Length: 273
Length: 341
Image 1 (cartoon, rainbow over the protein chains, first blue to last red):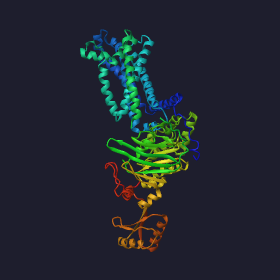
Image 2 (spheres, rainbow over the protein chains, first blue to last red):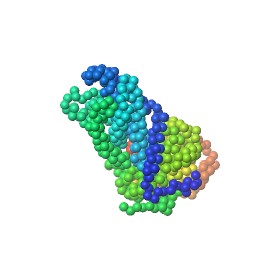
Image 3 (spheres, rainbow over the protein chains, first blue to last red):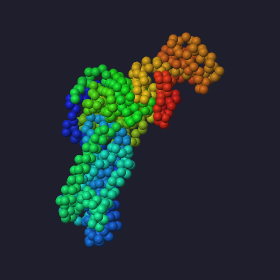
Image 4 (cartoon, rainbow over the protein chains, first blue to last red):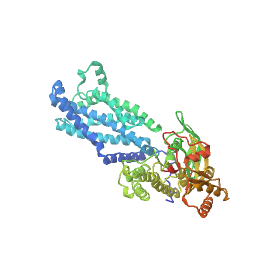
């Protein structure tokens, strides 16, 4: 080690990180997050069990009666609820970025990252990428269960488009959870706060049941709830029906949420003491 | 804004801090700190919990920004040139740590990649450092399964990947048992032998004495003493020799006798009846040898002769006239027996 200081890394004159550098850093951090899953496979339980449990619960417990109201019985309800499930999972699994982030801060590993010459965004993007992969995995599980309980995949293009749209919306929501992960004290608070936000959004939406039997004031909420428009757009794409309006509203929400939450999350991340 | 792109090798000071201030609400974590660390030396920053040591390290490693004052590391300004600065430092501490869920090797490889080492080099560097810090056998195990000492060694290895010019060690041995603490000290000494500049914070005089050549004593966000460790030791009385005769009746006569020996520069000894020992303040190895030689030659039966370093409390007492004040719930009062445990 006697030559240690003599062979110190040459210093960039202007210290800007080239794009390749950002990709390298993000790649190294993605690898880290994937290793977490390998080290702790139980962390995938939610991604596997949630789609299975929710699908079986809704189809077999509520499916008969809601389906009857819809005029198609339990089978008709399967076609209704599965696209909604895709929307729901995009939200629920997004929470993982917030809790994971909070753990990183509390374990001190984030201080290590922040003392390294890497872009602050790399840490955030790596987390989002891995959560999106987890979400794709969960969606695959969901679709297998869906087909088993009688869902008809009309055309694959529509399915992929619906999953893609969910991923776009999810990545915008992840910025919100990243912010929570930075500003709240620990992973439990992030989870509790996430639940408070998610619960009304999920059930005050068209995910599980059509909104036309809800009281008027609630319908105002559900009509503009991005989870409704996401679920309706996914429904249109997967089983047919109008798509355009819901698609644009969902994309609008995603853009707006990202535009506000992403800079805020990055700012909070940079300046966190 | 003017750019300051100094050659990091040009200055004498590897770390230079001027008038650094950081407040958290009412709490003045740093209240105007000045400090210089010469290149290739080890600076110990000694102080109780809450003295501002960690805040200082966090500013120097660009994790937080100061409210006022200036801090440069290897010639780079901590506020205006954080990216250049991050390239030349290593950080290990109670707060900056490795990823517990990852195996040791993966931790080092990841940091290598984050420091822009090519894949192959990151791999060999990880192997090399695991070997050097005796962790090769544990390379594939998650860091969460490591013992306390192994964790600290992995922390140290992680901070060495980028071959830093300046290394920050924030309380490197707090919470370790004495044997493990000695292991970590040995590692730090080897690292220093490699020519790296080190700023180390500690609560223990003994640790500072083992590792540092210069010392800055801080309390309440202020520097209360600074200088070469020998100077400060002389100021605070250095070690003390404790001679315990088997017969307590020998205490007073022994103390008087030692005082009459006429050893150059030797301060007056005191009697501690509680522990049954004569306490002789010692400033040099020569004094120690003379006193021990004389006492053993006198022929009284002794139960023990020990030397002890002053505790943090005693250092503070002699420097400031008051005891190290700290949040009551966080710091146990250092007693001799508890030093560095």
